[in-house]
Amino acid sequence: MATGFQEHGRLGAVGQMIGVAVGSKLFRVGPGGSTMVNRRRFIRTIGAAMLTAGGARGEKARFDLGIGTYTYRGVTEDQMIEDLGALRIRHIELSSPDYFLPAVKLDAVKSLRAKLLRAQITAVSYFSGDIKTEADIHTTVKVAQELGVSHVSGSAVGETLKIVDSFFTREGLKFGIHNHWFRGRKFEYESPEDLLKALREVSDTVGVTMDAGHMASCGYDPVQALDKLWSRLQLVHLKDVERSGDDKNVVLGTGIAKSKAVIAALEKRRFTGLVAIEYEAEPQNPQPDVARSVDFARKLM
Image (tube, rainbow, N blue to C red):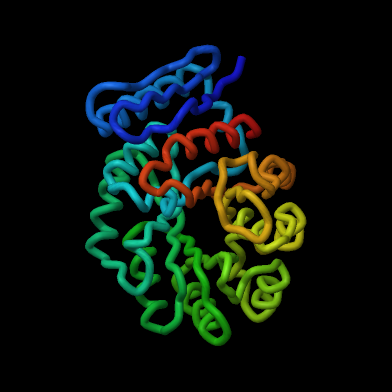
């Protein structure tokens, strides 16, 4: 029997109906009541349904399935935490824009960590964004320490990357260079070769946070990229995109990023790090599509 759920419709304006199929059961929410009431009812429904339908298959996986919190950038932190709990996600990479350099505030990090601990959710990595100065490096180290993580994802180039290497080695942190691609923009790290070139200049403290979706967007095969980068792979962003040459995100398994093959490769190679699902579409209401992506991944684990 199927253990996951599929979305029927989308949660939106007051009066809309959504349905979630779990196994052979269809759960419906709405119409009636406020949008938030319907949304909370939806969240409670999918959380309970996934547990009762036997969705714990993912617990046997070697790698750790989590979420990159950039996915929830359009909702409040409290709502994000509720949504993560509904999906039984226990590990995250903190990648919410409010925590990017240079604007991140340590007090806010401390407050968020307390909220996460109360919800039994642990941040295992921090996405810093671009590290450009020595002050950025000091701030990033402080954020990582306040958050209680030993891994940071982000971007640093040239001599700055070498300084990151030195500081992070001293502090017992790892740094994963993150590849990016968005239409109309150019990034230092887009291809596997871009990453490998940078890695030749630094120690094993520095590795790769590989984004499968961004690799596919700029025309690279994510599975081949995984193979090339394997010896320095620290963390994976599991993302799917509609087509090459575009950055439109879609539910895992419905685009061109070979999500099924990526998961199979990670399993075969016994990857034990965080595999963080990221979904950049629908920031004000990501949960239905994120739920479908989580279900897709867990079925393969």
